[in-house]
Length: 144
Image 1 (spheres, helix red, strand yellow):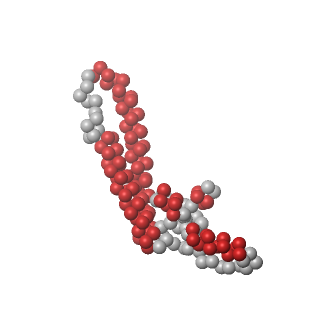
Image 2: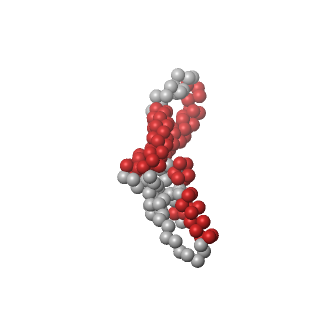
Image 3: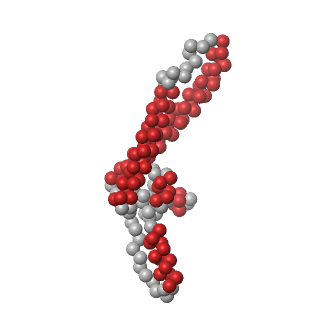
């Protein structure tokens, strides 16, 4: 992508009066898609591990319970436990949404449509996809 931009700048600078039609890249190559697949699989594995830990925490199966402590502090801790459990549930929901986004990205890789902005139809820059591999919008489309 960067090479294409450099070539376009070269021709604009040295041949300002000519209009050259440059073929714009419409999808990522198989090698690039494989690189993205690796990144996504790594993030997916980590996200699933975190999600499982959150589920265990919600069900109080992680071993960090206060069930065996003195009942004196139970009254004070019940409100805090409820808030903590609600926050953990929100985190788990957000993590699940992230996992679903990564899984959808893997499907787009299989279909060879990964990295194409759903608003503009142009390629999302590889730098953005490396940072946010489940992205479906370019920065241009997202800022609208």
